Length: 104
Length: 453
Image (cartoon, rainbow over all chains, first blue to last red; front, side):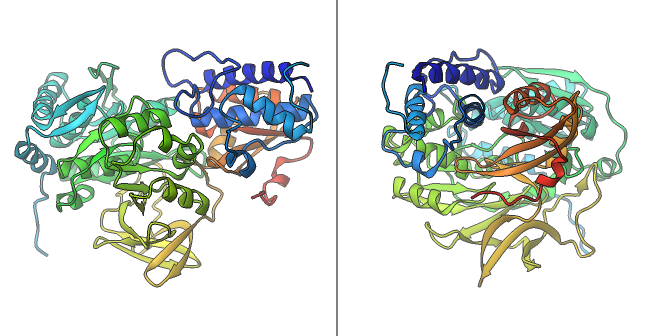
């Protein structure tokens, strides 16, 4: 599983979620280091939910991987997989049983 | 029977303002406004109503959020004996429908600078319940909630009855009004705070970061919130990055509190008291007392409410119950009891609320009836049939899911996109299905499938 492909997919889905849930004004830009939770999070809670379920659906459809990202396991991690898209991608790779590496 | 002239709550409230003119009424955009300043804004509103032609009995919507103008605007409308229709910007996708159902005479929209724009609406059709309030020369309140028949339900309250309880003096707190401007809980917190000359602190938005920022900066004491918000706060570990030690009281309601969340929240806020709240748009917010910080058991009622359990569900009879729905039959039985639909366990005087028996979906505290979502999705070209359901979600409690049968099957991800795009402008974002499944047989077969925990 290609880490960069995953990240590209997630950035695209995040941008969609941000556009869908914008209340007013400018839509923030989605980037690979965009924080999903915490003080600097670019995303509202509903947008986070949409984003995560879209990622799960895309993983199932395009990568043949069935995972639940919002799980007890993910929520009780010391370093949250939701702290950035890159962290989430690494978490997906971990769930997929693939070794985590920066290269393809 | 003795007749009593209903107390003019706005006159009572304004007299209270005069008792504490130097006290902070609201902190908005990093500036504190005193009760004295709010009094002046209130008087300005009355003059603006005169100029705009707003008369007693008019149904007037105010679109905005908590701000110096919106709060004094609502109070001035009460003084003018109008029928208030507060609307949040968040619900704007359904506003056109709300305007019609509430039979608006006027619309007031507050711009980002808190300046009002008046618009005459002329949608009045002399609904009997609205006429009843007009005959009685009483101000009213209209709130909306998701409807089981596919249309949002409009709840009409007579304000004298609803506001009576706030004249009993209670605590004065610095509070964040977390619940929305058009939510019964938000309305309740607002009038409670005003009556006790507390201060409302308004965050830039309702994200964890912005709420914690102002809670720290202005030493907020009371945070009324929802379990979903606490989930997100805990996930972000915001209690570690912000000094929230000023919080004395954290109240939670609008959805079932998971045990795990309450336990973690208590650990994160060891000095705070946790209090469960309970109420409905139809009945107002009840007085409540949690058994303890860590317990999900709560005593609800107070002197204006009676409660009982029948068939495992909680029934309430309230003095401050609504006059009725504007667009649905009365839900009260012959003796005035309302079936909340909440399954409860009872232990002595305490109840533990287990959640809804019905199909209503609770997304982070906001309620959705599947029928309302199905009605919209069914209009999408190519959709043969659709079933909307709730699914358990660790952060939000529940999320909305849709199972669709298409004339021309498409991948689920694409369908979700298509549905989301179609629902924009028709449904509020939390009502839009977060998950979509495409099937080849009837979606109704999937409706009774047991949900994963």
